[in-house]
Image (tube, rainbow, N blue to C red; front, side, top):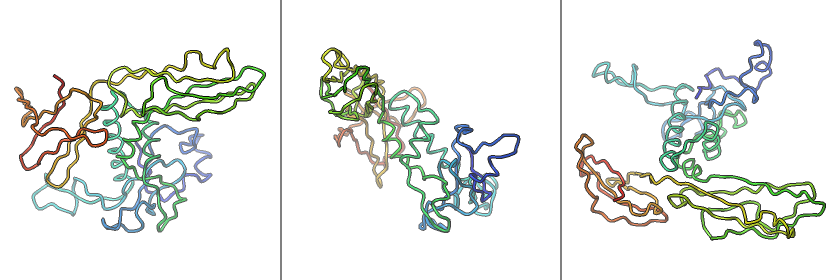
Length: 325
């Protein structure tokens, strides 16, 4: 994570790709992989100085800037004129700049990574985090400064988390013969809603050519444990088909379903995937040993593909977990 700085500079200008002893960090092939963050305007309801998600004039910009965060009217801890009546331990202040925008994007990265790891027991690469936040973020807008002065989209964490559960893999169908290969059908040995592929048959592959087939997995819907499906590919090549026996798709999903919590007025809505069969929701008021975990009396209600339980926040602090007897 790197703050894009407040120099009002276009980082695509030739000055940033010449001299400097060959150190040109803003060129695409010199990208370190760090997320470079620009400063965008906050919505009018929060006192924004221009159109929400447009570049604030002090922010650097350019094709190398990946994402934006709020760059004005951001409240934080520390010495300042916002509040100091109760002494230095209770100071807080309001800041601006890419230095306050960058922590906002950093928190989006942490939320995305933690949600993905809790659901899949795997971790996203830095490049995948950047791509997901950029692809699902709220687009930059024009305000005092045009959207062509790129600072990137504002992260939408919920959208990024949902998109992260869709995993893609690919395989390639080659035509090594002298005639056109016509792929006539592709179908699963067992129908399922959490696997899809592109392109769909029929399609033709010219002699000497190949086509990559992308398989998309909605990991939020994959059953817990190991699951294998076969994608059966048929064609006018009777000898090869072109994959004898089909393409085997084996998935492993850790048996550790994640809990998701959101607040609705005085209610706490707790949810987890319906694929987690046999798990019960428990709660405790204290994590210090010995903790007394007790079943939550409310029965889960199925909403879409999620078990949901609604509790009242007025009963006091509670900790929750899923437990399989």
